[in-house]
Image (cartoon, rainbow, N blue to C red; front, side):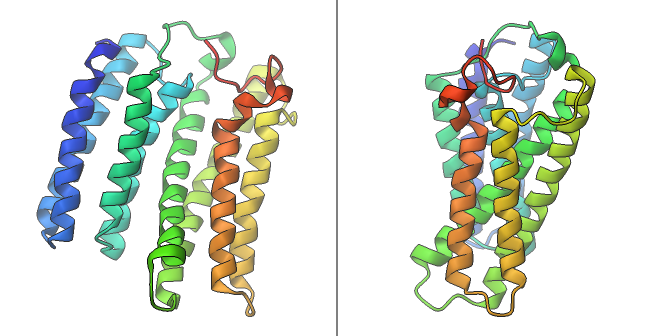
Length: 261
């Protein structure tokens, strides 16, 4: 299967996710689960078909990682909905997934079957997949932080802050595993675990930013609003780590992590 079929799978998945989000607002939990999960299966079927067609994991280019992120956002949304029953989370995750899908339709960046030798490591797929799931979970935490800062009229409760905390704990844990997998991959591919490549530097900055949030929230005198702003700043750093480094002069032609053809 080639990229031309993506729009059909994407439209079907987004329609299913939209119906699931609407069902969540109407307190129809069974329909919310069924539609969202069916949409995930449809979308993942395309990822698998691309994997088979490319004869490699579709993880090399920016467009390919957006493909995974579009999948993991609704997955993170349904996990949050199942655990905490927030009706709005499926709507937000669907809208965000739609944004990345639209970007991919306009600028797919899906390339040939060829993989450079360094990307043929068995650590390549788990490194990127775990990172994409971490990004999706931390994206959900960011949505929660934005909701509490800008949309919630009443005072933020400890229970709502706990939701942000739990999402960050899970996301940071997966990010840590992703960094470890990346270090093992780097050792196998280039002979060293860490080289302070621009991507690695921003990955460390992002990891530390979320760690600052975790430690600040543990302080008895912490301020909830400041903690939530810390989450938003951390997510901006995450975007810099993910795709922003492609535009840094220091990464042009030197970083092994830039997404090029």
